Length: 206
Image (cartoon, rainbow, N blue to C red; front, side, top):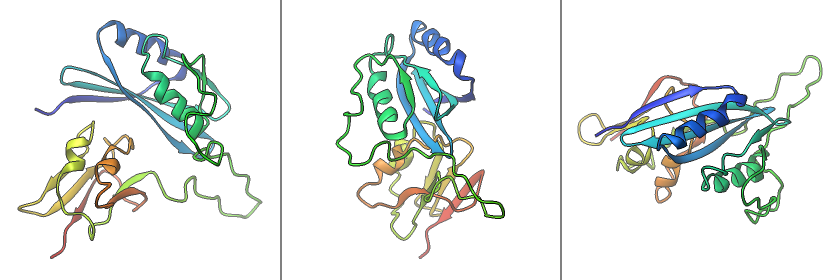
């Protein structure tokens, strides 16, 4: 059975109350994930109940602070420490704050992207050298379907027998990276940019 899901963009101020309401109604916290853009981070809060999966997306400027939800979702502190340390998201009042010692990393906030100032006449730099889309190297992909089964929002469809295709719905994908983790053995999936939007189809040759 495929889960029903929702992806809704909300403002920062009402987010805390939305998540508190979900917790009181018996929803479990599935994940919190961040994606870096130039000058801001996009953070998605995902909750699940039965076969329903809901995602609430906020855009957080790098100089703005957001409230922790770890006071009523204790497991949130893991995600919040991670996005604080790696992306520079400012999270206030985390219940168990590791103060940038959650990971052993050499560079502070390695995924944070400051606003780049360009000179007059210069082309603006891309917000990411790698891109923020899931792309597939079909020379490595064996169409095993592990990524499809791990995708929390069912954005991936794999047909190994008939069309030999791998499809991703870019409008549904939340860039959480679960599919990349599932493909660690073959390393076919990565973050990148192939310039395509909507439902994108990759075909296995041969």
